Amino acid sequence: MNEDPKDLGEDAPLPKESPPSLMAVRLPIPKLFHSVEKDAPFTHCLQCQRQLIGSGEQYVIEKVFRGTEAIIEIAMCLDCRDASGDSVSAESARALQVFFETRADFANRLMDLSLNSDEGSVNRWVDRCLFTGQMRDGLREYQVVALCQDEQIVRDFFPIMISGSVIKEISGVLSEQTKGWMNDFIDTHFGMPPEFCEPSGFRPVLI
Ligand SMILES: [Zn+2]
Image (cartoon, rainbow, N blue to C red):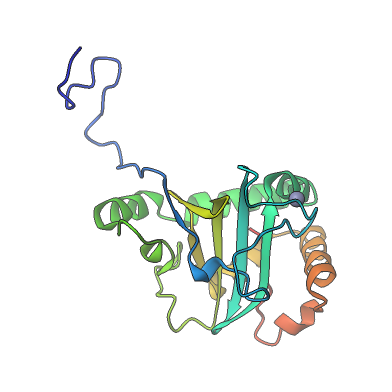
């Protein structure tokens, strides 16, 4: 048995230019990702009401803020999220993928986070916009997205923060059909007409 941890063997070459990778770390879910409505962590899927805590299944939390106020908050199991994805047109799904691939600097983000990770915190993951690098403090609108499991947040690529100006751009690449579905979804669950979000041209999108 080879006990030298540096010797990874010939089957696991690590090219020098390979970007640093992030180890998935599980941490208690910070208040940023709690339900403001319940003043506690989310416990159930918004769509199917399935119990999320104790299920062992992963789920996604998405929150949209205007200033310090969370105007939309969603916790959703992956089954419902996949089903929601079926409502997004193929054209929009492709446009979203291209937007993320071409506009986010993943290599730099990985480098920065791997070199400067804060052991017990997700702050650095959501302090700056994934796309523009703008600081969250001072943004008029922003959106945060996290992957969770039971009472913990999974910290690797997620969580992310996206500034309102980029959300507007993303909205611009979605088809009218997809935007219509998102508006209906938000209206159904939050009883809020999409116009509520539009004085500034800002309209939330579901990532
Ligand atoms: Zn569900």
